[in-house]
Length: 299
Image (cartoon, rainbow, N blue to C red; front, side):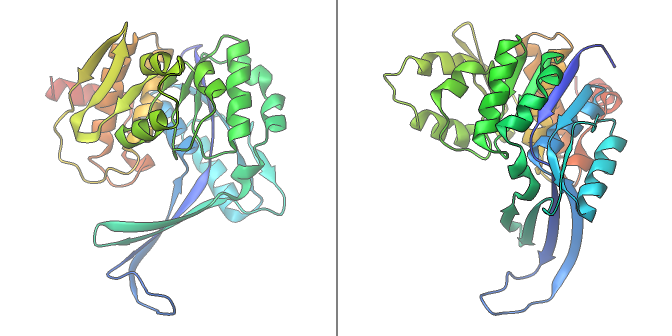
């Protein structure tokens, strides 16, 4: 680890995953194949991705005072993440995603629970933590007002900020102007630009901030007005869940280590590729050693 610190502000969820041959209709009961509880939440996933690579990572988020909350805090602590800034909300459930998987398709219900209690006032209590950071990594699974406040504090203290705009929603211009990088996938990029008046001057500025993840087609980054296409790395994909989170965590780590944006994107592209070769989001995220070994084989 280095003296450079990454702070992730975002969601902490437990994913409740049920596999079944058929999704039940209203009023119908069917037998399922399997059930698993898997740590998730975009914030937590990205924190794990950065920590696995050796990053000095602090998480700011919230859990409920239930068994899921304790399990997730213990799990993330064991991943080497500083969890001392986690809010435990009394009488509120930890965030969950109930996922039904059938025939390679899925249906998901997300209950934010304690994630909704990360208010702007809570963010302000962690101003010193944000100030001490080299990188601030944000997503959109906590209230948007809190994301804006976190970006304001990072801007105030000169902290480089990455915004992963997922789940996508219409974003205020002030937020897009404050962050340093925005990391949509292709679908999110389309919706992001559709929400902005094309005559608005922010469009050109936003293009320079955009790092677009394109799945099997690689990554696109803008540098000095030039569009740079970084090709994908051919791997045998097993599970693409969490690939975007792996990319974002790795990007934060690489920038924190002093890599220029293009090289940081190439590094994060490798991490994202490795992550899809294993089942699960967090379980598929590689260590620095695994990345180095992969690069020796895939020169």
